[in-house]
Length: 159
Image (cartoon, rainbow, N blue to C red; front, side, top):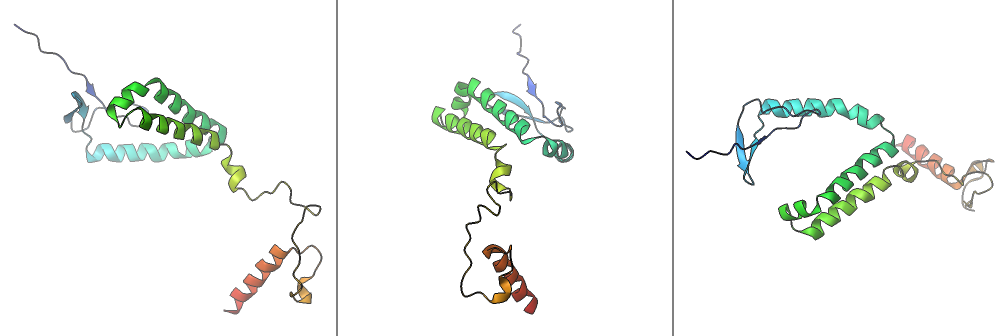
């Protein structure tokens, strides 16, 4: 009597664990059995993701970059496998390059978007006061940017 093969059923990944689908249903994808999630499984995944978000937000930018870079390393190790499942090697390599770019940019984002200016100070103030401004705006220490902001605020109050 011929023996039937026992297929592995791939489980869900929720909150760092591999639970079975609450419904127990599966479907076939690429010749493999895959768990079909129910609404409850989706709710559980959303709750787990919301619970993990504060820890991810609390991680340093350097650590987040390391996680992203590790994903790129794992993708690089399985390039051939991903190329078979997608549009080819070029697509996978572009995706890996994008992961590496974001990993490198993770700890530089604060400097890019931050308001701190390393060269700001009385010695490097290159703003030039306009001659058409009123005399009351000529107080010491007021830059052209500060005067423009004060002018906008005064206009907004008048409305």
